[in-house]
Length: 288
Image 1 (cartoon, rainbow, N blue to C red):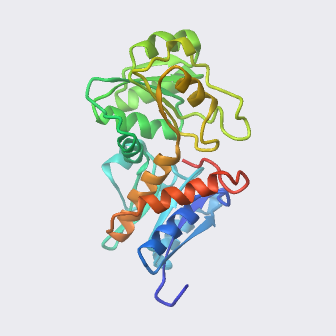
Image 2: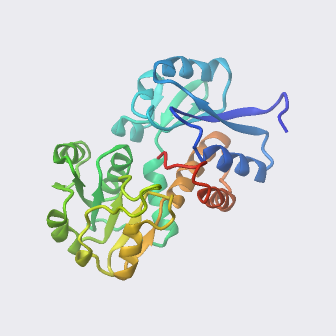
Image 3: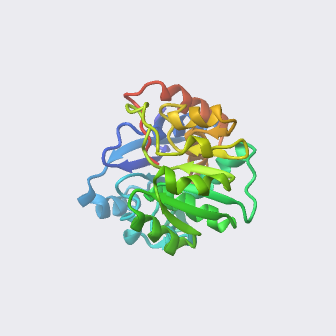
């Protein structure tokens, strides 16, 4: 029940109506009996600076930021975490006293998701990351900071090289079967950050050479609709352990939840809520 004491959190996007975050966070607040409500805000790009000012004017507790605002919102904030500064992107606004700060929970959320799947990151291991967009930046940064040797594969190799130069990844290669084959044969982790295979294009798959997939390879696909992409199905058939994007969505949201409340997030109820929404393809989309 909304009361005069209720604090407000929300998510900014353009568009934003398909975000899973309101249902996920409201379920978490209710589980802990917190007097907090989470709502979606459609923020047009030209209104972003005004929206940031509105956080202070309306005394909002916290904000999540999704596409297309992650890369622009830092310029309007008073302070960034070191991680957000490296990425040049923010997905979470929070208060540090009277200072409005920005952080990115995508990278640590990704690592937490791997940990939940009992996949252990070890320094010196090799990972191949498909794509060079915003999600790829967060994943590459998190892996490199953990001592992983990262190969970035993208259709436009110049964009892959930009990630290599920015985050200290090992190499940039083309997103083709021929280029991926030798990289995958010596890799322990493959991460798909592209939208290839996402609903309604479930039959599509990144150009991954199936013969290079092996049982020592863990395959993570950040897509969560469908729950099993064609890439994950093919990887499982080759004996790979796999994970879809639901857990990363939950874990990055849990980190934001704790930023705002100071309390451990009830990840089980958050996970259950997202899984219930996932089957309703008209009400959820990947917005990492």
